Amino acid sequence: MGKAGWCAMLLAGLILCSCVTPVLQRSFMDRGKRNPDLAELVANPSGHLGQLFVFGGIIASTTVTREGSLLEAVYVPVNQYGNLGSEPTPSRRFLALYREGVLDPVIYSPGRQVTLAGTFMETRPGKLGEMEYTFPFFQVTEIYLWPKEPKVYYYVPPPYYSPYPWYRPWY
Image (cartoon, rainbow, N blue to C red; front, side):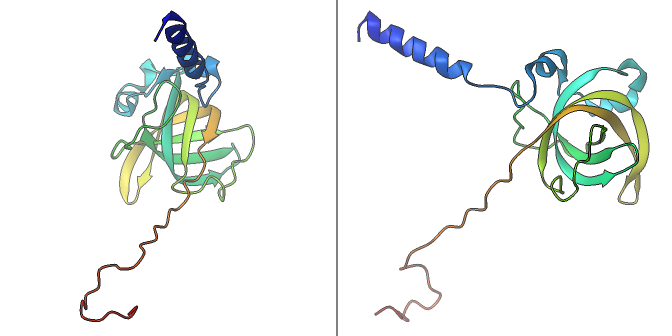
């Protein structure tokens, strides 16, 4: 391949890489600290008050209150574009308050995934089942609800395994 071919491939690669955009506004992605250590926020809340963080979660519940819509979610780390990591962090939950409207609990239902930019406000006591729990509390600046993953059904054509190998109903 000549010099022109290599230049064309390099240009095509640069164009493709530039098409990757974050799910949140770039200003929030640049200013916010990604993937906060929630245990550190609970242990030292005063050292992080007012900081902007970018992270993800799997919704456990959505409640509409007088203050706004309150999400309780399981923490999931995100990459530089806001895409969720593969595994949620075990036993780390947070509360996020969205004041700019109503997040409908039917749409923002348990199990749905979100990426959000939020300002750390405080820690709040609560319960996780019957256990006392301290939640890091964020005020949402921007939120992105990930689309539902479609259910995939696989068709297995005959012949397939049968517990009765001598019985062949298709003969």
